[in-house]
Image (cartoon, rainbow over the protein chains, first blue to last red):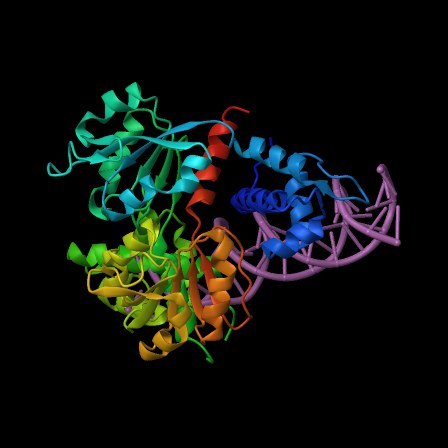
Length: 208
Length: 208
DNA sequence: AATTGTGAACCTCTTCACAGCT
DNA sequence: AGCTGTGAAGAGGTTCACAATT
């Protein structure tokens, strides 16, 4: 199958959410133009993105909101449940454990890991924090498929090596650096400072 | 000045951090090849990115780490102090208030706003949460330049309209939807679910 | 009449490749 | 000899524009 670009995938997520809000408002049909307007893209972009995966609309009419959302949900694998481990239970980590949106979309945080002796055995809601050194055991036990890494930059590579070592193939990384993983592992970076710095850049050159 | 792409700007942030780590390790000189290797890009990309802003290297030798970091810092405006307001003091919001990396880079959270009567007057560290309805007064008082929006999706547009109304021109949005702002306002989105869903997508089509 | 689905045109970003410095 | 800086080529992503369909 043809390689589909990251931008297309992330727009698909957007469309999915937009359709959810339309469905809440009892909207039954929507055109690519309307989706485009809501999501700040062109209608051709919406249609082209969808066309990579199939044909979901009716010419002259548009898309059935429920149908289309359901299709996108399947494409993105959102109706599966994923077992997620979170490594590094600091401020960000704790916030993520509470993040409703993750749970709602089937990303179930089943395992908390940290290396700080003070944190180990503490509980966050019902989950007890386990030592990272025991990852292999717990990853197997909870059938972990995805890991969220929210540890400091200087230990992140070591953590990721450990995750890869126990067969985890998908990682969401919050540490602000590029991590090396084998080609068969998918890693996505979430770096809040980078976006803030982009704002700083644009404010700085205002009027130049 | 020629429009520089978002990807270039975000790689500049990456290079900045990479140089910081090299400097910590007492590395004085670095080649585009070495930076590229660390950051997972090509050396031509590194040189091209830098070339948009000037010439910082010495042919045959490479770049002085301190010099280059300093130059990039200036380009990104990182040595300025920015007064930041955070709207929506939920889990994510609280974690951001504690996020060291922001403070270190000159993004100073000076104002916390929320609309929940239970939260108003509560303190997070030294900062008292103020009602969002009083934004105009406080934004002026604290000379707010940047706002972080971490409110639920259904009120985010209203919040952003309020921010724009008091002259804020840069917004970091954590609500998972596209927000409308005038052209002169810069808005960057941080949507953790989108990255997770990309992982879900890739795991789902493994082997297809 | 309205709106999709899509090949072709266009544009933007990345990589190549090499002249030019040190 | 080694590495930068950059114009040109190449790749990839977006938009156009229109035939096809309801």
